Image (tube, rainbow, N blue to C red; front, side, top):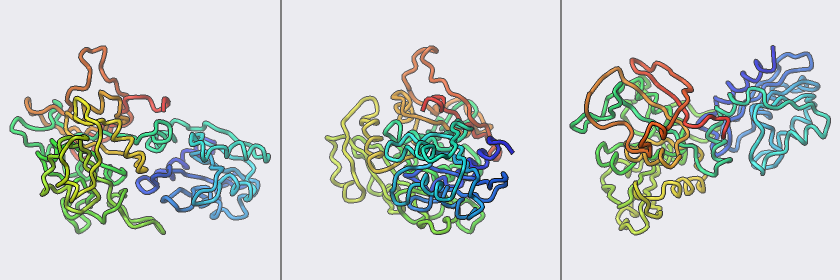
Length: 389
C-alpha cells in the first residue's frame, strides 16, 4: 500500500473523535512494522485522553521498532495533560514518520524537527487537504483565534425557510432533522438569534434519533460544555455532554419561559452593553458586548468571547438576518444546507442581507459534499478554500 492509502486510513480513524476531543484536534495514526505490515492503529478519543500516536504504539508494541507511523497532524513536542508524542515515537524506535498537516500551534509544534534531529525520516504534506478538512474547526481556532462557524439551514428548492404565514417547522424530513442533531453533537456551541427564539422557541439541544426508545423531540442529554450527539460515550471518556446554547439578544428580550432557559444545557445570552438584562441574569449567564449594526451586537466580539472559553466549533442556527450578518462580516467557514423537494413560491428566504448588492459581490462557495438525506439533499460548501486556512 502507498503512503496515501495508509494516511487515508489515519484520516478515517481521526474522524472517530469528532465531537469529543475539543478543545484538542482530531488525530489518527497508523503504525507499520519494518516489513510494511499494519501493526497498530489509534485515534484521539477525548480531551485529556491518550493521543493517537500513543494508542497506536501501544497496539503495536515491540513490532513498531524500525517501522513507520502515519499521523494526520504533526506529533506534538510539548508536555500538556499527556507527554510529547514525538518522544513516544522515538522511544518506540520508529524509523519513519509521515505527517499530513504541520501543527500551527506554537505551544505544541516542533515535533517533526525533534524527530529529524534524532535520525527519524520525516515526510510531510501527504493528503494534507483531506486531513485539514477533517480538522477544520481546530485549525480555524488556532490560526484565526476564533471558533470555526458552520451555518446550518433548511429550505425548499426555491430557497424558502418559512411559509408566508411564518410557519417553518418540518420543511425537511425526519432523516434530515436527525442529521442536524449529529451536527449539534459535534459542536461546542449552538448560536441562534432572538428572532428564532421568539418565533420557534427551540431547545437547541442534542436529542437522540428515533428508534432508540427516546422520541426525537424528547428530553435532552446531560448538561455540559460540549456535545457528542447520540453516540455512546467512548471508553474512558467523560459522560456525554450538551453544547453551550448561545442566544444573540441585543435588547435582552428572551422570555423567562423560553425553552433555551430550561436547564437542559448551559445557556449564554449575548446582549448589548446598555441592555437591561438583570432578569435574564437570574436564569442564564449573560455576556455584554458592544452594540453594532446591523444585528445589534459585535459578532466578532462574541466569537472572541467564545474562543476565550475554549469553544472550537460553533453551529449557527439563527434566522436569515443573523446568518446574513455573520456572512457579511466574513465569519462563516462552512455552510450545510438541507434542501427539501418542495416549493413555496413565497415566504422568508433562508438568508437575509449579506452585503452583496451586485453579482460581483456574490459570496462564492465551493461544494465539498452532496449527500441524499432521506428524501432531501444535504449540501456542504465552504466560502473559502480550506487551503487558505
